[in-house]
Image (cartoon, rainbow, N blue to C red; front, side, top):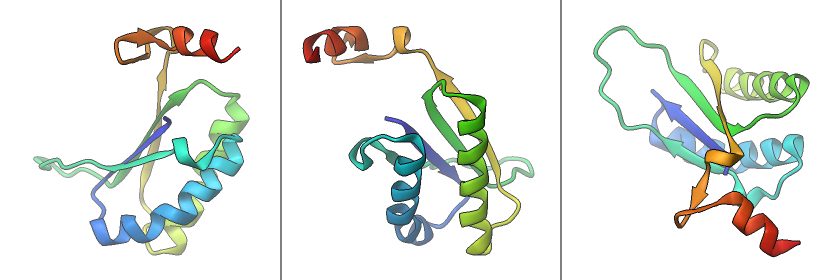
Length: 111
């Protein structure tokens, strides 16, 4: 966690992008690289839909969300993908579960 979900990109491109993207994202958010998840959404486009990146994560300061979107846009544009929609899906820690247990269960065990 967090999850970076890509729609409309070739798999080979995402595999090439993943290592530097994980590095930059983890550095910005100040989290371990190992918890950043990158996924490719396998969807069938019915109407004209732009390429997009969904970022599922817990709420951070607006400035950090802005910095993430700016960095991601720059990385994608430098590789030829300029018109990409980037948006955040904000997760609630109280509604996030692992193995049927709320995150607070795991956080209490690490204190």
